[in-house]
Length: 318
Image (cartoon, rainbow, N blue to C red; front, side, top):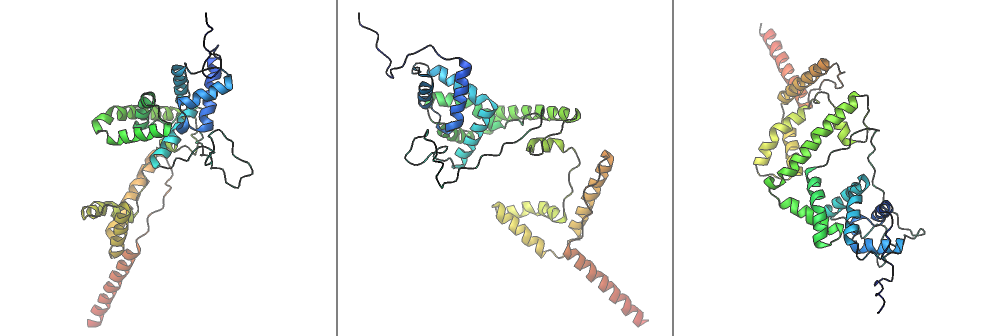
């Protein structure tokens, strides 16, 4: 009776290492090469090299380990960064990778090439709620494992595919994910409110917590912004669509407006509203009264001068 054939890689098929140990190693590999380069083939080779065990028949296990790692907070950050780069078309050739060398080759410390800047991590205070995910991320987290299993593509290609699919979906198809995001946002607001009431102080660098923390009145608008809000639809209707061109045209119209007293009055009314709401909430009024626009001051001065001249003329006639 002939002996059983050895595995193609020449490594034993078991026993498998502890699952926790394998999960930790998968997390390290994900961080080292980036999710955009993590395929089942790469993961299998790296684990075989680390544990000296044949993982060729453990594809379901490897997929599950990879998904478990990607669901962790650090894995989510890696995925978010990779998907953002994929959508913007700015994905690099690989983390620390040089042309003509493998992904696993370490960067030469003596090289004059500057290392890429690390992404700034958003700090959170202890006990502070985690910012809720968007509708797209709920969709992406649900569909990513399916697309990866069906196509076997790299994370970069999967991210592009998911982004294109999301853009082509109808509002009705997006509705379930929009509802998930809305529910998550409501839960986040409730948790943040409870966190603040309990004496918690959201980290200053947290964009979401900063928004949730600001429970004060809406800030008053300047005369120019009242003018902008009133004229934007009119400018767009004239055929100007580009945001920059719209802003430039509104600025031009503002400069051509000689009497700005109407918009100064709107700004003062908005300021008075802000001041009343601050007093009602027991908050200090952090804004100063708006100053009249330059053109309005000129018009007022001209009006006063005209009135004075008219009075002098009447006096001479008498």
